[in-house]
Image: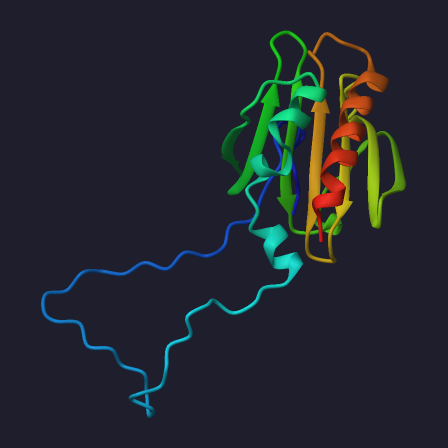
Length: 183
């Protein structure tokens, strides 16, 4: 899947769990459970893996209000869909912001920049992209949660800024805050 630079610089993404839809019909509902009419209905949902929980996580929940404050950004974040993926953005007037999302794995991301380097955050492999898509005001960190899930963090300053180290400091600090929460 190809990512456009504008989309990548605007936001990051979270996968949504599929939602089922039903239509209303008149009458009395009658439960049907197959061949075992008195089969008990489980009272708790089936267990999910940490990876599944990460994929279904609201990206705005990746950082607390205090953590967002340490990054110098405004809380709460703004959740929006970008290319059918949930993305949370936090900003500060006149000094850019940060976006986070849960993506379908590192291999699905088009991680391009002036310098792309493999790295680690805690127990997770990651990629640091300085000058994302050739923009001096942007820096990205992609953290691998599994082969199929990655958290993408994009930090940016105002478009007139040429301070890649400051953008990377913001992205790196966010990655350090988010990584311990990942499975």
